[in-house]
Amino acid sequence: MKKILKILGCFLGAIIILLGGYLIYLFASYHRIPDNQELEVETAAAASSDTLTVGNEYSALTYNIGFGAYTPDFSFFMDGGKSSWAKSKESVLDAVQGAGTLASSYDPDFAMIEEVDLDSTRSYHVDEYSLLKDCFPDYYYVFAQNYDSAFLFYPFTQPHGKSRSGIGLFSRYPVTSALRRSFPVSTSFTKFFDLDRCYSISRVPVENGKELVIFALHMSAYGNSDEIRKGQIGMLAADMQKEYEAGNYVLCGGDFNHDLKASEDDVSEKESWAYPFPREELPEHFSFGLDLLPEEEKENLWNSARNADMEYVPDVTYTVTLDGFIISDNIECTSYENINTGYSYSDHDPVFMKFRLK
Image (cartoon, rainbow, N blue to C red):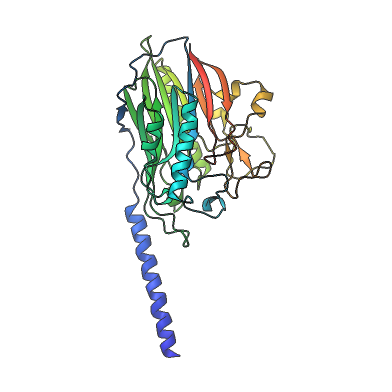
């Protein structure tokens, strides 16, 4: 009996040492990417040098591709589902290629694509950004890295691992400079699950001497609080307002991780994480593109995201609109569409908007 107890004691001691060592590693390796980081602007050989023109119609598309994992039968452990990795490397390649081909088929002048992995355990270390650049061969490219996480040894049956992921901007028109801004995020233990968050600010010249300033973002989803939410929206609003006051046009697109259709007094049943976006916190002169639609058309928009607690089952799986665009009032929205693919390549579907600069 003493021998058995000794073996058990050694076993438990080893587990405690390993757990303690892992926690030390987790905290020691945690870092935030610096704020106000200048971003590289890459240019394809055949990219146009044309300048934006007032009155012409342009288009923008935003798409969270879910790191190439979310085929319709995929469920994610952080949502209460099963998996922490994509099904296979081949599945990642197919999903990213499918999403990129779909996005490019709309021939957008500007595409903001979120949750693009560079080198992650969960996506079999596929460089998804390179795949997407091949889908947009004649564009300017800006990549803002959201996070570079430590190895997450959970769930134990399939550890989520290490992740490097971010937001890509693909522009048909010249981008003169780009900047990465770091959103405020949780400082508690939940930061290891919600990770870093950011938005990029890219500048595109207009013929009248002004700039179209493009904000590409991905706001927090897990572990966020009212304080974090308010901090993120306040920071974004201040930066957008600054550009508007400078006389520029502002286009902001991405995954807001808020219910963009619901009002704050909406009492209908919804997931706790689907918090209505507080419209009153938007600065003056700004609005969501979908708010410019007739109310019936807005309500009938296809929801841009599904819950990943289960596989996608039409009319059963919870869906919500998390993705879209904010525009300044010197931009006219001429059409707006949430594209229905049945979540074929991601747990999100693209949003496509056409607009004119006034």
